[in-house]
Amino acid sequence: NFRKTENRKHTRGNFRKTENRKHTRGNFRKTENRKHTRGNFRKTENRKHTRGNFRKTENRKHTRGNFRKTENRKHTRGNFRKTENRKHTRGNFRKTENRKHTRGNFRKTENRKHTRGNFRKTENRKHTRGNFRKTENRKHTRGNFRKTENRKHTRGNFRKTENRKHTRGNFRKTENRKHTRGNFRKTENRKHTRGNFRKTENRKHTR
Image (cartoon, rainbow, N blue to C red; front, side):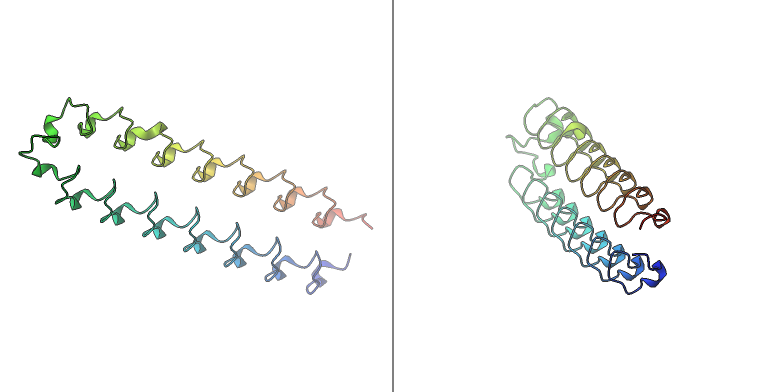
C-alpha cells in the first residue's frame, strides 16, 4: 500500500495517478473524456441530438412540442402560426384589415372596446386568464409559458440552475457538496475519511 505514489504509474489499483485514468470508465474518469458517455455528466455541448430535457434549444428547430422555435411555426395552423401568414384564412384569425364589411363576430377590433367576448382588445385582456393573456402578466401562471425569470421556486426541469443550491439531485452545485459522503464530496473535506481517498498527508501512522 505504501509504494511511492509517483511510482504507481502503471498500477491499476485505487491509487493510480489520476492523470492516467484517461480510459477508465469508473467514477473518476476525466471529465473532458466523457464526450460520448450518455450518462448524467455528458458534456452539455455534446447533447446536440439528444431528445431529452436538455437538448440544446437552438437545435429544437423541427420539434413540434412546446419549445419549438417561434420563427419556425410558419405553416403550423395551431394557435401560434405566424400572424403575417393568415391572410387568406377564413377562420378566427383572418387579417383585421379584411374585416371591413363583416357585421358578425369579426367587426373591426377598434370597435370592440367594451366587448367581453373572445376578441376583446388585447390591451384590455390584462386580467383574462385565457390563452391570449398578455405575456407580461403571466407572472404567476404555472403553465408552460410562465416567464423564465419567475421560475425561481419551481422544482421542475427548468428551475434556474443558480437556485439548485439545496437540491440533492444530479445537478446540485458542486461547491455545495461539502458534506455529501457520495462520490463527489470535495477532496479537501476527506481529511478524516478512512476510505481509499483519505489525504496522503494523514497516512502517517496507518499501517
